[in-house]
Length: 254
Ligand code: NDP
Image (cartoon, rainbow, N blue to C red; front, top):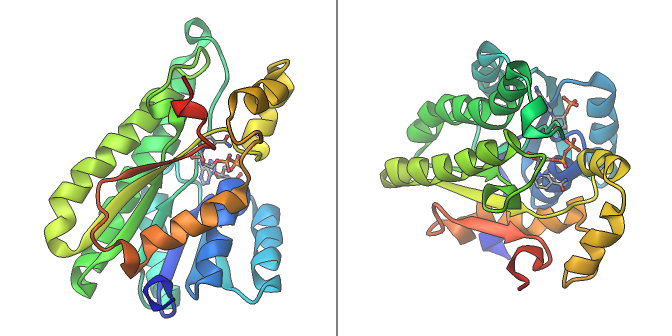
């Protein structure tokens, strides 16, 4: 369908070299976008590019550690230098340290907040002048159901995800007059390297998630492709400041 077509659009997907980010990058590429993925790990970047290109996608990768504010600003300049424009920003990179709150160090706190909240903020600021000049653009920020649910091992993760959700609403309101849409996707429990760590550390988590999820399974990175294409496309031009939960009904189950 024409309204979902992303041909001619350039998308930056942070953390696009694996997990949910790769699922999103694959969806955007399949819809016609030129996709630039980012991650710190060169081997993961190369493997993800091979996957994206296997299915005919146009993709490239840029290494950057987004904990460095200068690297965030520079990343957008590098995308524009290489591709001539940027139309879609997906802030997907994220980390968590599963520790009890009392054991969380200040360094742990800063690592999570820098990666999950400050970097997305700086990247949103960095794309703004380009979107303004081009007459609009799309930002998709990846939150979590941890934005509105409690977790005993999410003392920094939860506020980082609550923060990115509320930041997205603030940006949506501020930049709507300039035809910029800023929405959040809130994943539930998804089978990725991040959650594999959680399953290794939390006995019974694998089965507990299935038992509580009405859909009866863990989510997969592919579950995010369609939602990302929708939010990145002209089909969602009047969708702004929304937070779309993708969790197989986990969080609404009584
Ligand atoms: P993964 O661990 O699979 O992927 C995380 C990605 O972030 C990797 O591509 C990693 O690349 C990148 N990344 C991490 N730190 C940095 C950094 N400093 N600079 C640049 N890139 C970085 O996680 P998921 O796919 O599971 O998570 C993706 C998003 O979804 C995250 O924001 C996460 O919080 C969120 N989410 C995930 C859920 C789940 O159940 N999996 C549930 C709810 C939300 P590299 O290692 O190469 O740097």
